[in-house]
Amino acid sequence: MACCFRRSIACQLSRVLALPPESLIKSISAVPVSKKRVKEVADFQLSVDSLLEDSNHKSQLDTQDQARRLAEKLKCDTVVTAISAGPGTLNFKINREVLTKAVLQQVTEDGSKYGLKSELFSGLPQKRIVVEFSSPNVAKKFHVGHLRSTIIGNFIANLKEALGHQVTRINYIGDWGMQFGLLGTGFQLFGYEEKLQSNPLQHLFEVYVQVNKEATDDKNIAKLAHEFFCRLELGDTQALSLWQRFRDLSIEEYIQIYKRLGIHFDEYSGESFYREKSRDVLKLLDSKGLLQETATGNVVVDLSETGDLSSICTVKRSDGTSLYATRDLAAAIDRMDKYNFDSMIYVADKGQKRHFQQVFQILKIMGYEWAERCQHVAFGIVKGMKTRRGDVTFLEDVLNEVQSRMLQNMASIKTTKKMENPQETAERVGLAAIIIQDFRGLLLSDYQFSWDRVLQSRGDTGVFLQYTHARLYSLEETFGCGYLNDVNVACLQEPQSVSILQHLLGFDEVLYKSSQDLQPKHIVSYLLTLSHLAAKAHKTLQVKDSPADVAAARLHLFSAIRCVLANGMKLLGITPVCRM
Image 1 (cartoon, helix red, strand yellow):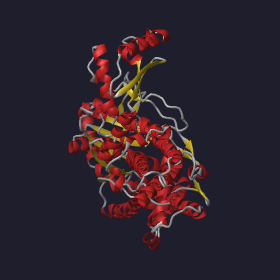
Image 2: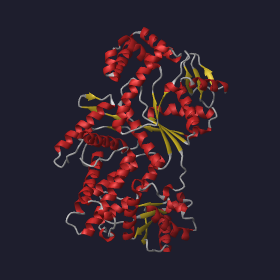
Image 3: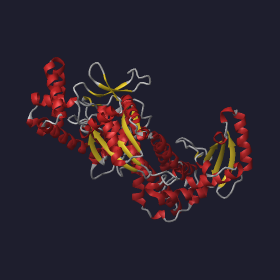
Image 4: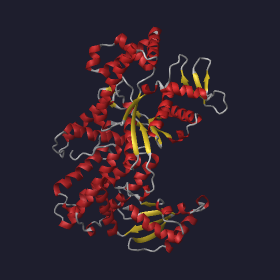
């Protein structure tokens, strides 16, 4: 694979530069392949800037001259057939037959691990990683606002697991807080047992909307809600019984939605688990002299550098009830005790940036050095996600909508294959469409959602990825797998074949980039380019009616494309379909 070629190049460079090969390997990168590219280029390149100690003060002419001189000192061999100097780069071309054989063999042997066994990941310590994501609120239907946290957290957990880390997926449910005072009071005033049994979360949502509206005009309702939450905090049996019922009903529905999304958790936790431990946190903060009481009676931690309370975090209300921050502090400490993590990643929207900064800062001043291991992965807002009926509030509506639209689209296409479960296929293709739309840009960016754009079968969409995978699977199904035993690599020297092989070379680099910045966009861009290359090759590299050795070689190439495509899709949280 790419790593053996990088090492071969690095060994040559090390002799000329008197540097160890290991220090050069990550600087040697596969040349990016364009989906529109037709002319053949080098396979690997090295930026000369990466070799110069003081590249900031080097002119472009210096860099080009250095590249030219280095190229003259290096020699071709049985692996590297051409070495040239480009604008500030050294370019290396690999023996075409060696390249073809190595890539196809590596994809076949490594299968789902292709790209993950690369030298880029060698020496990577195996870590214990906690990922907290999704985190819907109990007694509220699963809002589309939680969709991004859910799919982003799932991607991060998938990637970390694929790299061999021990990952714990935690769903930290919003199951405590003042809103339960409102909901408990609201159900006592406006709730119906029959409706709760027939459609629990819909009814609780309606109750919550109504009690919120009433509380703005009626101070007595607000007072009753406050008293209900105080009773919860004090452990009142009746209040806790009602709360527990709301929690159980909510989780039952969430599990069904996660099943549709193909997502699982190792632990369902919640703020309620830490209502007792948050008191221990307050005692610890107090013993360290970190608590101050404001004029309103709230208890705060002063986070200002000057000690003037210009930056504070409230950890206890004047009535003695706990807050989200207090419970998050307790949860972090408990998780370190339980999992002894090397890294803990919180996946939450960018509006919570300040909250996590404060939580991490308080952990530090409490003396927990491991606070440095905590990280907030922030994301932007999705705008304009609506169904045909209007504004979407619930994820369930989105899943139903995407299934309905895809079924309609599939029914209108003549090439759609017969399938056992068209509803399941439609949902998987639709989910791929949503995930690719979401992951194409920087996670921190807001974006405008468009059903028409998302569900297009052509262009850079999840539907196109699924269609490409299904088409390649159909080829394998039609012609069998006997070709995998022995391939005449001389039959794969056309420009289209070479472009695909060059692109397959760079899969490990894409995985490495995403592992460093936790951005899925690198993998998405790679898979879309691979699908476009495959679509062109499918038209020009005919299998049917070709000589046996040519057909076998091309089938092997198409099989490698499908394998890498499926690997990347699964990392993103997409289940590849075999027919559509």
